[in-house]
Length: 323
Image (cartoon, one colour):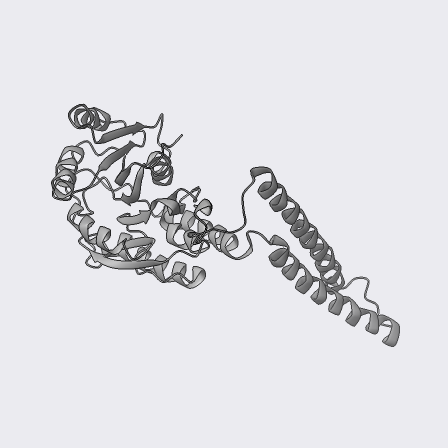
């Protein structure tokens, strides 16, 4: 269970098989933070590394009381690593960055300056140092698609270098590949956000963990995010709307065939159109029932968890007893 906030800043770094990057990255981070008058912690999450990454992390932890090491039993992925870091973070501001040294820790002061005005500050790898075909092109297409679907306009969703206010990350649960969608997911809470250019460096050690197959998983997660943003508390609206539309088309088809049969005496028993019309009516009923079941599950979830369907930014009152 996470402790009560007592620090100014938590830095969360997920690492997986980055044995050569751990110590140089640690030195860069501490050099930057050391110049700031902040109480901070450095949370490094070992995502089931199979090389000497954990040994390097232990070297850091034994000499620096600011360092917190979380070690997974196996590789769960970057989303899980960031989620663990968020759960154990004690800082009022949480900054995340990759463990491969491509994010530059010297951008941290710029993020901290902007987080005074916003709830989320996202890095933008303006001059990205990755392969054009396998990395930059799919990323650009994904960013355009995500911005269009979610309505949250960011140029670089995939940049891990971001700053968050504590109350934002503590109220978000992550699954799948959803770490890149945090600004979009949080937009449902009414957060403010901005994007600033950040330095991006070529990979110095190891090899990329990115695979093109992740693009497919991102698309599937995007569908989930869109549903969560638009219909999370009212699933009947999406399933019911589609069901009604499908049902009306089915009724029109069946009505047309009925006119042919009753008015003109034509045989309709062997026509594929009849099967399609009946199938659409049945599908319509299934979708509406699915929406009703979703409504019941949503209500059970919120009522049993005691979760509100709103997010409060702050409360202002002249009554001191109100806090």
